[in-house]
Image (cartoon, rainbow, N blue to C red; front, top):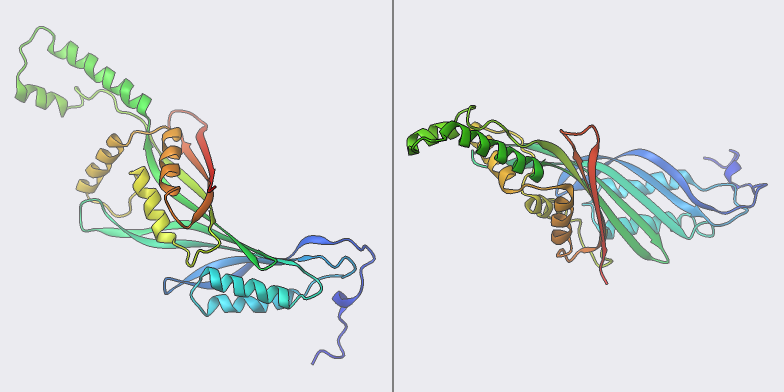
Length: 295
């Protein structure tokens, strides 16, 4: 069918220089994750180690990606796809790479009421194969709420000062104090909170058999204690306020909580945790980073 068509890519280049990566990015692709179809975008490529070669066979990479649409996503499947990349580029390439970008939609329950709703989690998988050694990395992004400990302490001090002013020289009556605590006159200040983001860059152990997306997300959200909510009633909003009050955290606290949680996961070989608190007090963000690698 193509015997009479010119194949310029098979010609030798006039600039014999090897290239680290040649391929395609932004390829639309359906993935199968936990039995559900997920819309994804793929970056697929190989190294061009044969310096005299004009180019690679991009259509062969494109067609090899079809395997990802037909079977459950797993480290084993990614290894086989990358092996296919290299077999189709024998004598040209010694390494192959694949990046998958998608959003997981997970149904999350409310804190108290029977309501639930969907929350999206941006995800990336980075896979690299060389000398038949597979390197896998995950990138996950999780939103959460953070309440400033300093702001909370300052608010408590103002409430104490107002209490002293309102009840100075008066005998204390429990019902009167209770009413005062529930009034705007009594609670004159509140701490500032902000929507925050945890960005997890995780290197997986070579022996990993699955991508534990939900498990890793649940573990991280449990460590933080203040994951943002979906559908809520007033009881859930009150429970969320309680969770924030019991989990006051600077960005440094959040990074340390996530570090402690992730080092316990047996599939994680190393990580970089970056937390970003989009300050409601300042016009800039507060950021903390923690890195770790298994010895």
